[in-house]
Every structure is written in C-alpha cells, then in structure tokens.
Image (cartoon, rainbow, N blue to C red; front, side):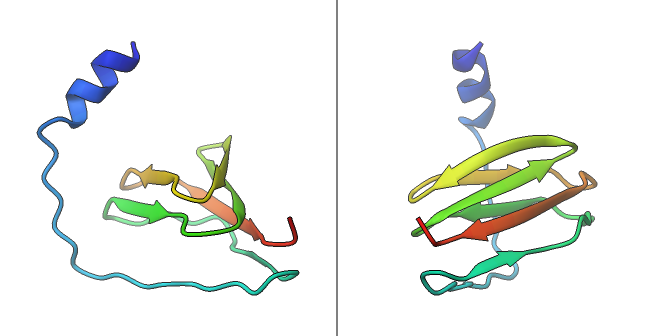
Length: 83
C-alpha cells in the first residue's frame, strides 16, 4: 500500500503561488480554527512539534515532516514548541 501511494506522487508537479513562514518561539503555542481552502496546501515543519487534524484524523508532526492538505478538506493545527 505504501508503494502504491509513493507511485501516485511520482509524477507530482507543484507550482508555488504563495508561501509564508511562521516562527513560533520556544514555550509558545499557536493554533488555528478549522477551515478549508479551494487550493491544495503543503506544510513543512522546520523545527518543533505540531498536530495537524485533517477531516477529523490527527497527525503528529516534527522537524522535516511534510503535510499535504487536499483542497476542500477541513483542517486545523496546533504548534507546540515547548518540547
């Protein structure tokens, strides 16, 4: 199953229309309300820890993890750099 998933991304072509960088200081926490976008989104964790919930399923993230949020999917995240 993992192999099949990897093959689906083999021909992925990404165009970045807009990007931003969020830096949360050690000991601070950042969270968002649930929302969805009409475009796909990528999140790349450069440091610290976070929890991203996509359509009710929770994922734990850490440094060097990538997250793909498909268009139209409801999601929210919590960044916790106290660890």
